Length: 383
Image 1 (cartoon, rainbow, N blue to C red):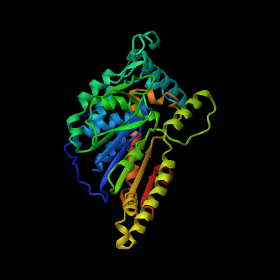
Image 2 (spheres, helix red, strand yellow):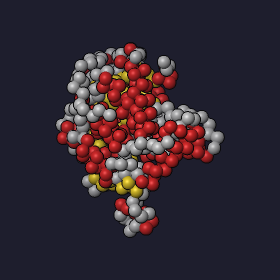
Image 3 (cartoon, rainbow, N blue to C red):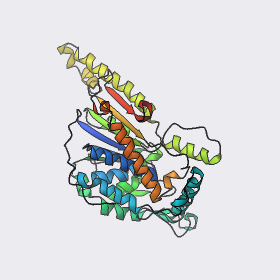
Image 4 (spheres, one colour):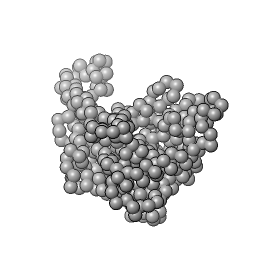
């Protein structure tokens, strides 16, 4: 792969009818290469996000994007995904879904035993043999290699300069609350990214300012609510890139049960959340319209001022890109780190994004009464 910076990409070549373009990246382990493909297509279309929010592997991809200039981002993403994956043996034998499933499970087993280069490695002894209270007693893998990888691929000074707003979700182990490490309130360090992806019991909790943090996907695997509720009141185009689909088939065996359980647990019920947001935003717009019709003498009353903080005339466009797993991938697809699967996932994200951007309404300003438009390839048609 070519890792040379791409001089032809600019930061603001494309003018869109929105104040903010947000990119939301869900967690999903090895499936995260799909997000790399999506971002490549967005970059080629000169769409550069103003705000990137991620959880788990999404936080890693987000940090690489926000922590590099636009002309180097795709190459740095490719460099990361090439480093953490290995060439799979016997690819010439993959002539059926059954064979591919078997070899994928072999590759996943290899990652489970040995880890992924520059990402995580298995500890030499089982946690049950370690002294209580240590990292080795509370996790199966060591993730110190990921810190080194992030320090090499990510310019944290650039992230903290505020050129692109960055957010990473994690869970406070003590309180159980979901928190976001955000450039609006934090100075981002590699530890914040490690915390967002510290999925137990595999990965150890990460200590930040005296508190321990785990993977944000334990509470919510998609940062949509954070971006919508905690951002400035502005017209926003959101690209939400999910790695798990809430919809699926009824399982027929135990392996399919495990797969379906993961999909439901980590999908974050994207469409239900979107429907809820649309209803809420309709109320906000109606409230704004009502308050504007009040006589001047009533508008300065304290209760009316309070209501005005909940009103909004802004518009939001939500573009969903959801990875559709192949039948042969199985329950280990999120820790199957073969080079072949990575390339498949990246290619799927790239082509899904290309097909989505072919529809002009995706980038158009919403005109509906609720001020929200949504686009979903699965619902609106594949080409």
